[in-house]
Image (cartoon, rainbow, N blue to C red; front, side, top):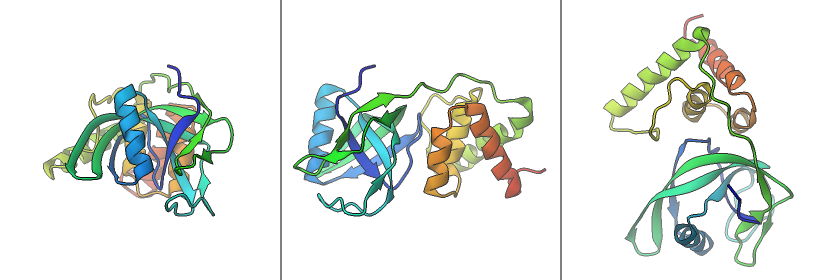
Length: 205
């Protein structure tokens, strides 16, 4: 896959994980233009965590953007209200920015970026099976409330997928989510999730 150069960026106060769902309410002109471009071209855009600042319009003062993000692929678009798009995206590959992001004249962020190798397929270790089962139980409870938090297919035999879905649900800081997303070894990511769940007594020691 070849990334757009430079890669258009959508800074958010959230961390997108590969395979994760991302609903967006888009109303700013720069991002409406970006969604239109991505829908026409089929290209993704980059979601990066805005770890400091509150970006308003073209004002970049005090904004800090993380250097590792995840590509967002548009799956569905709803335009029930004029000038507002409800967009459903799914997280793809991770990427690393090659230099500090800059803004176009319309305020859209962009930067050259390179892809990061995807998690290798790893079976969850037997000792971590309770963590897998706890996620299955959490999903069952959410579905009973008519909440569908995960995109299909569900990949219970993939340590990275299970870890990523837990990271989306856990009440941890943005900084912690960012560090977990950046980890290269999915088995370590899942192990850290398991340790957190046990520390909170979600799982028994």
